[in-house]
Structure formats: C-alpha cells, structure tokens
Amino acid sequence: MNGDVLGSLALSILSDHMIEGDLVPGDYGVFFPDHIMGHDVTTPPAMRMLDSKGVPYLRAAKKIYLYLDHFTPPKDLESAESCRAMTEFSSRHGIANLIGWGEGICHVHLFEGDRVKKGDLVIGADSHITTGGALGAFCTAIGSTDLAVAMASGEFWLQVPKPLGIYFEGTPDVWCEGKDLALMMIKHLGPGGANGRTLEMKGDILNWIGNDSRMTLTNMASEIDCISALTNESDDEGPGSKDWDWETEHIDVTDRGPQISLPGSPDRVDDVYNHTGKRIDQVFIGSCTNGRMDDLRVLADILKGKKIHPEVKMLVVPGSRSVYTRAARAGYVKTIMDAGGIISMPTCGPCAGGFLGVLPAGEVAISTTNRNFKGRMGDPTSKIYLSGVAVAAASALKGVIAHPSEVVP
Image (tube, rainbow, N blue to C red):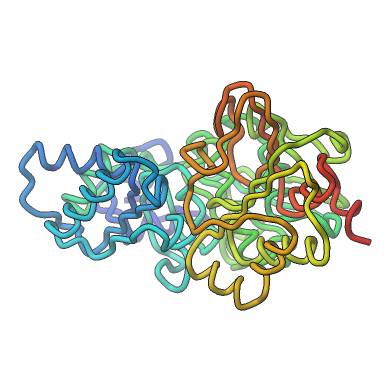
C-alpha cells in the first residue's frame, strides 16, 4: 500500500481504513467503513437482496444507520409498508440504529453531535452523504447493491479518487452564505467537473461562515459528481499546506453576492441581481442542504415583524428534531408562523416532489434544496430556482425573486 498521501486528508483517511489494494488514484481498493447509512428509498432493495440470498446475519449491524425520512410520515400505503419492512428487518438483524420518522433527515441527523468525527470513513446509499465532509470525514455514496454487501460484510470497494484542491480566495459581501459559495463552485467547475475526484476545500471564508454553512457547501459538492468533499481547518493537510502535491482550483469570491441557480440544472448559476422581479408562487426552505439551525436563524431574522406576500406559499422544514426543538426555544418557529409561513416536521418530503408542497403545472418555486431538474418537485412545466436562505426569505416577502437588501435596511 502506498502510504505517501502527500498532504491529502482524504487519502490519509482512506489509508487508515484500507483492507486490500494500493492507495493509488485510479486503482481499486477494499475498505472498512466506520458508519453505513441507508434510508427508506435505497434500503428496501438492499434488504430484498440480502433476504433472497438467505444471509443469516449482518457483520456490520452495529455500524448501520437506517433512516425513515424520505416519504415520512408515510404518504400512502406503499410508504407505510416500506417503513414497517425496514423496522422488521432492523429488529431481525439487530441493527443498532433505526431512526424513526420525525427524527431527522439522514444528512442532518447523522452529522449532529459526535456520531461522526474527523478522520471517519462513512458510506451512504444517497449521493448527498458528502455533507459529512464538513466535519473532516471521508463520506462517499454507494448504491443499494453495495449497501447490501457492506451491511453483510462490513467492507466495500472504491476506486481511489484523485484529490482536487478548492481554494476560496477573498471575502464575499455580507449576504453571501455557504449555498452561494457552493453555487459559485458548481459554476466554476461545471457539470461533472469533479468526476472521480475528492474535493478538499480551504479558504479564510470557510472559517467564518460556520459549520452549518460548510455542510451546505459539502452537500452541494455532490452536484458536480465528486466522490467526496471535505473542509479541513488544519494547516498540515489540504490545499495550501506545505505537503500538498495535487491540482488546485482557485475561486475568487471577493465582493461576490448571493447567487441563484436557474431552472433545469444546479449548474445554471447567475448573480441574483440579474433575476430580481421574476414572479414566484412558492418558497421552500429546508432539506439536507439548508435545514439547519443557522438557516432558520437567518430566515427568522429577515421575517421578523413582516408578512409573507399574500400570493406566496412558504413551507419550512427543519432538518431534524433537534433543529426544530432549538429553533422553537429561540423563538424562530413563532416568528416564521407569525409571518405566515407553514412549518412541517422533519422530512425530505418536498425536495424530490414526493409529497408536501408538490408544484402544479406552471408554478414557480424558489427553493433552498440541491436540485432543480425538470419535474423535480412536481409537474414538468413547473420551475425551480435554487438559492440560499436569505434570498428565499426576501423573495417570500416580495412575491418575486429579490435580493435580501430589498427587505432588510
């Protein structure tokens, strides 16, 4: 095994977890994960594979987190039966962590507290598992077949990714959030611009925006096809360190303001100033991208003492029970309700158009989620703009796409 990781935190983590192979980008290796995640969309196929093979027990049962979060509370009989099947499967195999509906979205709940630590290796059957890289963990997505194998064996295979440094230079304007940095990065690298790469991100702005915003950044990194995405406060690893020996992309964010992604694809990014005044019907704030405490704080600060435009519906979904509880104690929930917003229990729900806030034909939404593909949240003729929380909140108040400075003196 090649132990020379050349300043890369990602390769250092993989080196510590390698069972078989050589740590050479492009080569294949076998690794053991610290945590394995599945949810109510990706886990049932894995369960059926394991049951069809008569697998008697799961070696990784104590490392598994299974989430009932995508279509919960169950929206129909199929969703209810799926939840019951996962509950019975977990009980039968002694799975340590079955997270029931209402506890949280997988990419929010899993990375709260001290469940995942810097240096951990996490695999998850969902592309946005990259979120946990904000903690300095290597988090990478797998499919349902690999989920079944990992649960049964405690191992998984991976083609070793080549590190790509992302260095954010300069200081953006006061309204810039983690979501805006993410959209700038997606535009800079382009569709598939991180294919086969692990992103390691640095820059003074990452130390200032807070952990919730850093998680938004690593979450959105999956939209450019990366294997994993990490932020790292250490001066000894990552781009800018004396040992870094990998390619680095520099993104100048000096004085850059809020960004917006135009309907059709997350990479269709532009400055929000170029799209203000466009009518909207709905605002959604939440998801694994922007459903954390800092997001609700920004929302409440902008909404306080104001009313949502009468022709706009605003749905807010805290990312976990912990976020919901803390937001209620801080008064954010009351502020949102007083302004005319609607709050749901923690769920993925509207993000993929599964239920809650489904868009009818021709309606336009501005959303803090991670994807805006055609038909993503409802009818194929509906349109979705992606933005940060501040832009979404300002737009809810104005009834059109708006810059936050239009509603905050």
